[in-house]
Amino acid sequence: MKSHFFNGYYCLVDTINEDTLYSAINTDKSNHLVIAYTSGKSSADITVFGKVVTNTGVMPQPFRISNNSEHAQSNVHLTRISQNDSFVAVWDEATDENEKSIFIRYFSLDANGALHSQQVPQKISDSAGINVAPRVIPNTASGLFFVTWFSILNQSIQMQYLSFDEAADTFKDASYITELEGTVDAAFFADDLNLHTSARLNLCLTQAENSDIIAVNIDDHSVGFFECYCSNNKIIQTNLLEYQTTAIKKFATAYDSFNKKLKIVYTLEYTDGGETEVSYSDVYGDSITYFPRKKMMPKVGTDRLELNLSNHKTSFPAIQPFTCTTDISDIRFIIAWKTDADGICFNEFNSDFIPLTVESNINSAGVNASAPSIAVTDNQKGVVFGAAGIESNALYQSGVLMAIETLSANSISK
Figure (spheres, rainbow, N blue to C red):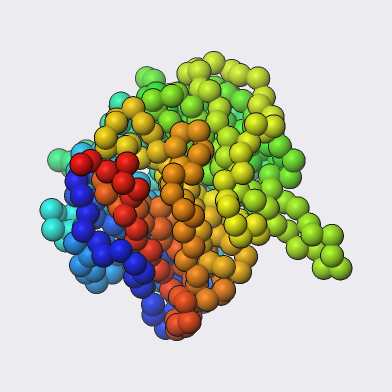
């Protein structure tokens, strides 16, 4: 379905509080944009909110993702559901002074983008102590939801498959809570872990050939790929491979379903050699041929391609696949990244990481642009990000902004 946003810049959220973007999606059926962000005056009173921008550009009032306004919340993450206008949110919430728990909630929009129904939030983590930084992805083959999070007490990544019972309006266990069978970077296990703001650490979920792929930092030069699927209430795991390169920082992943390849985009950690060390990097992309349920040899990033054409001090890359509407076998990608002083850049690429358009730049007045999120409809591409200003205009504190452009001509149905 086509969207009808006006091309250009939007300010989506700007309050007297610190407003921080965490996640953005567009619904699968009607292409309404949904963002998730936090807002609060201090870390003790941060609350997770959602906001809808309808496919015609109407912006209803924000809504609370959590019902509890007394507990500090963070690390909110959204995922859309195939063939309808529903979506799921997960987040961590401080349920008492020494405990954080993981919550999940199901939302539905009507055809006009109005919030139609919302399930009561459910706590899904069962271990004591600090549980943070959840991620969620739907598995379209099984109809289940795959959720991961970090248990600080257990020093592990925990995960579970859940089903959603629409009649009972509740999530139900489809698997036992399971720990990832692999070693990951020890820096993950900090009480204040925040994957959105970390310049180096990430965990990405990608669906590939009916399985769910976890990509996560193993150490400062490797990203591990782990394959998971649910069978008889158990999570079956395969340690697929390690992607290795020097001093890897932030990364993001996607899947090319036609060519059967995992995609990774990332930045490296370099210094400029001056009196004050400044970390910087270009944005790189690489492809990994995927063999389901087969352990593969490590891949060294010698074939990586440089993706950015300018603004070479970059960080926080993001990638979103979409299908060329004139050829369903032609998988395209929108890739966006933050720059040190010039806001957000993004471009459209084919499956070989060849740029298809001129690189776009959104100048955020050089003031602390945040990690971008990407949404793609049948005719438009949007990049959502946080900043303290846009062009020469300052915001109250920090807000959530969006840039909309039309997809390149050969990606749109005639």
